[in-house]
Image 1 (spheres, rainbow, N blue to C red):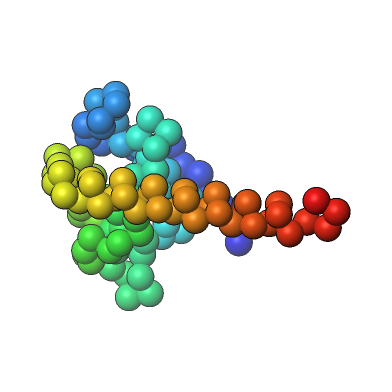
Image 2 (cartoon, rainbow, N blue to C red):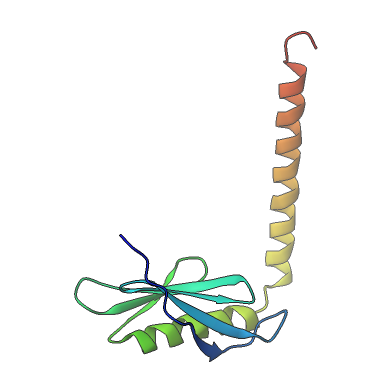
Length: 120
């Protein structure tokens, strides 16, 4: 399967860091990928029945559309929504706790691996 790269189309969209533009690249027939300032934004993909499905940066479907333009708009809109929706302090605290616990488990695993090395 060969990739076809067309000239990118740009759609204005704010970003946290730069206030830059979302750039779309036509990777292959029916598959378009969006990025902004080097950051992955999402993609739009044609289905076998000719519709387009938009996916956000986590590859979660954001909708099914009759044409590519609508799917692209939905991907950009999902990005804007994700950027403007702040995480609650409780969610942030839970994520920090989970990250700390994961780090401790990794450190414990490393210590166990080193302690069980032959000749140590």
